[in-house]
Image 1 (cartoon, each protein chain N blue to C red):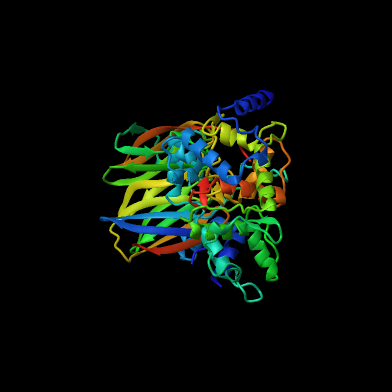
Image 2 (cartoon, rainbow over the protein chains, first blue to last red):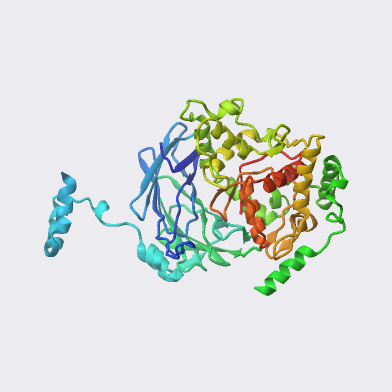
Length: 104
Length: 158
Length: 282
């Protein structure tokens, strides 16, 4: 089970609406650590991939301009109750995580 | 075993270019694994035009009523500004989200795949009061909409 | 910098029609106080149901509420509730659980804070959590953020809907603790020389620069809070420290006597409001 992604996927008529919340610092690299005076290195999710029904539904490219603990919502047609939605993120330091949820 | 072969290819200094070519041909290096897809130039661009040219291939765009941006008139906290973009275009292929007042205006791009609707929401950082701009690429053309969001500094921190 | 201090002090020193700060703390009973406060806020903000006061400034300002409702669509504290649930379900080294201390029921908000007549002190939920850990051979958790906030988030989430009904027993020591908290609330402090009451009673609903001052009624209901400013969950006593520092006053220790007595007073003032934690704020 993903440690850093919560997903809710719901059918609304013919459309599947997906909402997800990721846990990530999303550091821009432009912030100073107030205690050490050093710049906090950039550490942010730069790629998100959404898959369902054997297809890549959406890919996103992000910068550190997305808020900490990012939220993402999107929708697509062609999904059905019980199908699985898989969300994967990668960050600029090589980190990655993925999670799945069934469409309700 | 495969990992070691990949590593050795890169370590072969002056022969690297040729070696990489051979390795790709031999199927030892998957292009996706080596070539980063993240559009660095677009995300580091300091102007809207530069960012759009790098991300979408062109900066030319026309304002469109078919794009709705939902964002607060005044952001409670510039670090977390909720933004939604929804558009009624057939054949929309991608969406770009920009904050004009940010040092690097491009914040996100969304590539719409199989069945995806031009309908995305997220939360962005805004450095100061400015317009949030949504670009939708459909039929090879860029359509745009903008919404002004005020970003204020409060009086009570803690 | 100086101009800002003067402007802030002026804004908060402005007196409303109801003079609250001048009465000596022990001239009125807690029950009388509660009646006065509830009526004051209902008169000041007519048409706002008691339940809505638990949402603070979001009950008063439409634009702020728009921000907040968008965030609440998928609130940032949800993963912390899960983390807290995992803590609740994980046994201590000795095999016992938090449930052993809390009657197997995480929905504890309605039972705290309370007056412990044997030990003659106010016991808050956070304090009780660490006393539970202590009794079972575990190290105490820090009080302002981190693991304790996660566990409080889970317990508060389970407690949603419970109505605040803090009892101040008719016991001189309990009443003294209540009055200690009340005195704290109305005392000016810090370089900015402001009291809690200046901003959250007299000037509730008014602005300090772009900040809308939330009313004291309902202040204790939504904790712990994921403040966008903190980028994480924090506890009530963390906020107490922050508020004191804002007026350039010395902050007190989280879960020390001063803040527990303050919580006792403030929680009682919000009797009738539903517990709605954890919550998201700017």
